[in-house]
Length: 298
View (cartoon, rainbow, N blue to C red):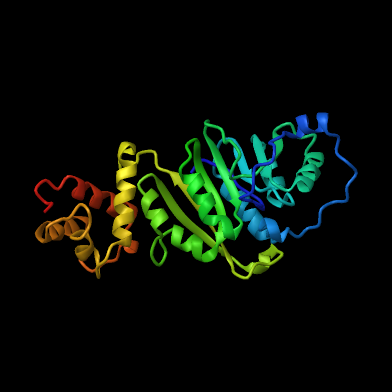
């Protein structure tokens, strides 16, 4: 792992606010004398801020094991931002709430390695250079943020906090999601811990989960085949049948029964196994077998 970590993250699917650094923003727009924002987040922005010190320190320890510049998705009240700033690495903290962004700019004005940007994390232009992503993700935007993150280059590691069930599925616990299966050949997903709802303010209706994503140094499927591979995985996930053996015989790349048995045997899964139970290496091996099954279509 080689990355950084988040704090509390208020994303929004609304139009992007202008990305202004702490220094340039202060030069053109002196900070007004505002009262400090309340500790709780805004419901309309999906803000649930971490208030459990143990969880914040857990984020810090995961980040400390990584390297490179840090981009925090949703600085919020700054609980995690302060821990990240203490690492001494270049830190860019995105915050969509202008009032909170202004408050954090004033707090970190003497920290030259910290930049607070008022921006929508879904619309902000991320750097192409290597960096780490950290974020306490608004539960209702988990899928949108994950799709945006996985499709981007540049970052090497991500440390995320999402709804517990989403975190489990992303990491293949109890069966993986379609999204994870489509990206497994290029990333590894690891579940770290469950975070109780009481660790947030305001408390959400469900628990959260911390997990990490690391970009593989050597992908299991050639990048040039990514679109075809992902289309294949989607078709298998949505295919009809009581298990992989039946599903594979009914796809747009139909495989003969005897060839299916050979493929599944080589991958190490039974005929009745469901798509959600395959690991990243198994998906990659299955794709290679189906793609190269000369004479196996019919």
